[in-house]
Length: 460
Length: 70
Image 1 (cartoon, rainbow over the protein chains, first blue to last red):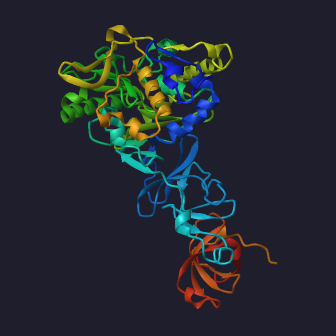
Image 2 (spheres, one colour; image 1 turned 90 degrees about the vertical axis):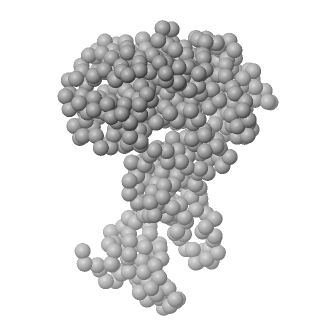
Image 3 (cartoon, helix red, strand yellow; image 1 turned 30 degrees about the vertical axis):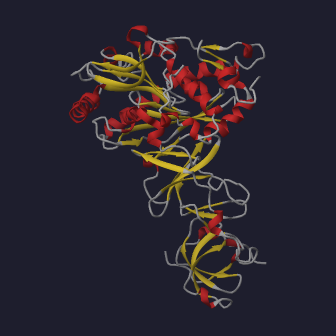
């Protein structure tokens, strides 16, 4: 494997001009190790949702890259994210998934930390340390920046990273589709139930790429669509709204975020859905009308699978979930999936959606099982000496993206490929990997925040 | 040496005798089996501690004083 001294990811491993990417970036252990430093220690990462920690003392143990972190609300109600590692000898100070506490106590030697991260308890402080240990200096390591965006909690270890909304850029509009209420009110989402977590034997970039907007793999889900796991007992729930819409790939080129997007014609509401469950159908019909009243033309946007660089996936419509692809070595990914509902939706709606979501997504979900099967075997079949000599192909739709896309008066940001006729492109993947290479090559955020200098970058 | 006391079971209001002879009343028990938040009632070694709230490390608790009514 040749990564030259100047980190020639683009010149040596990614050749986006012809749509080729080396398999090395998925299976090479040196590259994986470098990703932890250059991507996961610098990017904004999704940690959790405020509805998981509603009261002072509540915590949820999450992950940032390989590292365990504690998302918690202190006694004053402030939200923090800490490295889950004692400052004395590194033991995890919290080994539960979630709960409520007054302190995080290390089980090794007993150092104890408040929910604000301060070191509050040191065994034999007077006797062994002669009261000289500076407790202020030895609190839990806290993230450099934290942002609560409409209830979703994001953090970065890099003090120089731009604010989250600047990091997201125009993609904020698509994250809003995830977090705002179905009726168009801001920030109405709450997490439904617990977080599903499971391991897949593949590199973390397989799911990240897939959720960037891989429409080409729909054949993998053919059997599920034939079986009909939709809530109406046949086909997919969303075929009506999909068939009525323009289907787009949208890439934010200088940020590395991308998504599939559906855009309804002007003046058209989503067709009825959930017709076998009258309460649910009525709820969504009402929400669609309210949404159009509140958001106007913007309500024509229908979210679909998307990816916020590097490892957060959105799926705002069917079902409504977010996922994080946590790296666990070059050959393993720990997938976490959050399911969302509007917090003031009727109980019947929440119960109905819970069943539907689980049937569709997650480790027991019929559709996600198809995906895991693909990532699992694709990764395994790319590790061998011979396999590594042959790059993957990312040729679809090269050179066909347009800026300033508009459909019946509604402008869509970023670079867009209209898939309605062409069915598929690999522009989102090229956008994702271009940003990946920039992170791997750049020394700091002055080189990564290219938009600040007005330097506009295309995805290829 | 007496058997160790399981501080995890102690409820707020209980008083405990500490290794240096001080007596403290439990204010909060975080339930980690290692620490108690307690207020000093007496402290022969350092009288300035009386009335102060501190974290008490489990091995420092050598005996139980008055039990809280629960």
